[in-house]
Length: 298
Ligand code: HSE
Image (tube, rainbow, N blue to C red; front, side):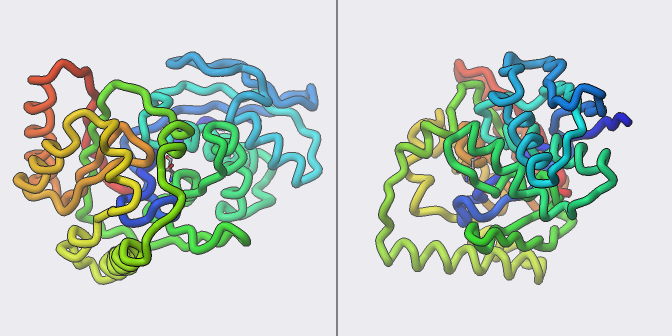
């Protein structure tokens, strides 16, 4: 009748895969409790940690669950409690965690009528509410774990990729809020053929490197000439962090989702610890508050 879940944070885009690539972090996330009610209504009964809409149709988790129930032609009611630990507007899939967590839990309480991959399309409704765009690169990894690729949006096709076990993510979150809606609005709508060639070369190589566990190739492929040059302007000390990350031996560095969080992908705990220490030291000397953590990908 009741289920308690961990709804994980995620890193979308990973530089080379804007809107199509993302991975799941295993140490940061929300806690959610979902239970059946006898009211035939979906209610957001409690949100702690953040100030977010309690109206079902204005809450990303509420909207995602309503669309799932509608699809299933199901009139069972549910109460949703969210202990929000991921800050909205942080760039690590805050809305995705709530949307994905809610549909996962409801599906489970209904006896799993749908497979996890089939839940992605309903979680995407929450993303649409949050940002005006139904991208799947956060909700797919939040639901399926590890690395995931969106091969196509219409029709939706998600491809789960392998997760090399030595990968670590250092995620630094400067405590300024960037709304996905706003950071999508500044992206140019047209891409030159030259840049497109570089981008699909990098994305294909990154996917190949996940299969062959070629860490050096992963690092060389974590590049973005299309979106990052525009968005990075909004992130304080982006270039300095990039330099530190490469000096400390990270494989690659980029914006997490739509920012302002940035990630440094590292091989092994030792390199991750060095990058973590150096980022912390550098940012502590600036007048910006921040959160920082190291996570495995799972
Ligand atoms: N792919 C999306 C974007 C992810 O970059 O706008 C948002 O978290």
